[in-house]
Image (tube, rainbow, N blue to C red; front, side, top):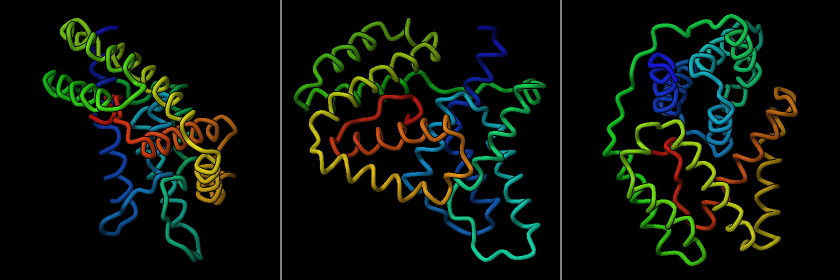
Length: 228
């Protein structure tokens, strides 16, 4: 990966959640906005799909411009999911013309922060039964940290794979009723916005939402650098 590409990825990645949350709050024009589990899952699904941060911010602005242009605004926008269509339109436009690719700056994340994040995850998993293989993998990464930290994009892929494995283990330990309750919550929250998303978007959102619920129910740490 070239230096400009690496700088752009870091800028998009490590500021992704904070930028989206703060931008949505400003566009909404109100005080404190608390993101729902659906919002968290949707932003994470965009990140995982490689949707550029700039596309998300532009999409939020476009969605609110359209909302404010309405003669009747009977309900305030209470979820980032309202912006889903606009975000994907902006992402598609950027993919066509590569708009906004130039001029990205280095995000400057400290390697020690990454190390501490992985150490915290490994320690938490070592206190739980059944996740020994995953905690061992994290210890291997920590033992060769300089090599792994030299390519954060590759490290993130490895951590995401470990999270998928961790979620699979945790899911087998949940009861049928627990899993059903999670799916009911997902269906309830996503129904008002279903028409704004493609089948592919909905599938990514479902995975992100349910994985988050499984991690929470099992008391598992998040390993992705997105949660650093």
